[in-house]
Length: 325
Image 1 (tube, rainbow, N blue to C red):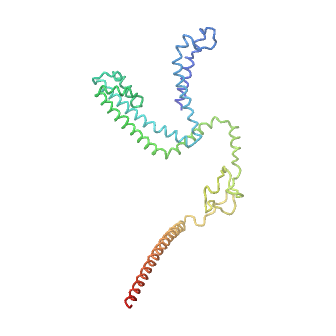
Image 2 (image 1 turned 45 degrees about the horizontal axis):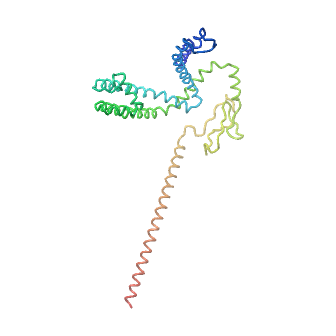
Image 3 (image 1 turned 180 degrees about the horizontal axis):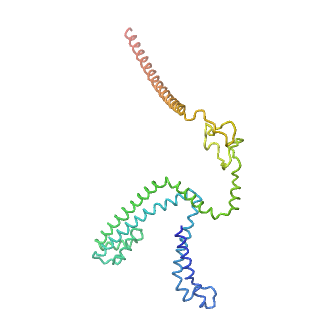
């Protein structure tokens, strides 16, 4: 941000020196504020270039406002972290552009789009960025060797290099996003600490008084807690707890009094037994549920076997009666 501020100051002074209205003060043809004179029109283009750079720097400095949202600040930090990957891609792309521009210039061909190294490099950049028109591709059909060279360039840069850039950005994003929220909070703290010296004492006292940190906050309705905190309300169903997380001790609240010892301080055996008991209960529930399912299956199988045996007995009885007749 310091370099951006310095460059912005330089551009603003350059704009003041190139202001077309100031150059037209002596020759304004009767108009007080005009930029259309011989000296002013000569400064219009460089002045517009300085204005463009100054506007970009203005919006770049506005990125400091992203600290008001941790999520936006983390995204901005990720963008700055992956810029190095994009720079590596541009370096590799420039290398291949120079290589193929020199190779195409050495090739015997009369295509005006690839006449010389600078022109060929410009056209190759257009191909990589998708700015090469279709009619120019049709002209390559008259030069088969040139078309083959352009084909290998497209495979190398558009297919291979771009997909490699996507893979690098994906890996870099996954590797850095886990820590970006913490970095965003550190960045916010840095900006706060840098801003604190410029805050007046009266304003700081008014702000700290509005926080009411000397008042005791409530743990719950009617449950008065400690001072020095800021109470934040949330729905009762947001964080359901079945065990009271607040440890309460009877006795004096004097800071000089000794802190009371906990009943089971340093003894983790009960916690271990509680965890073992919960694991056993879960295992028993699974065993009982599986045994019930097995009994139901056996009962169904036995009922089917009994019905089949009854049916077989009935058929044998009927056959015996028919023999007696």
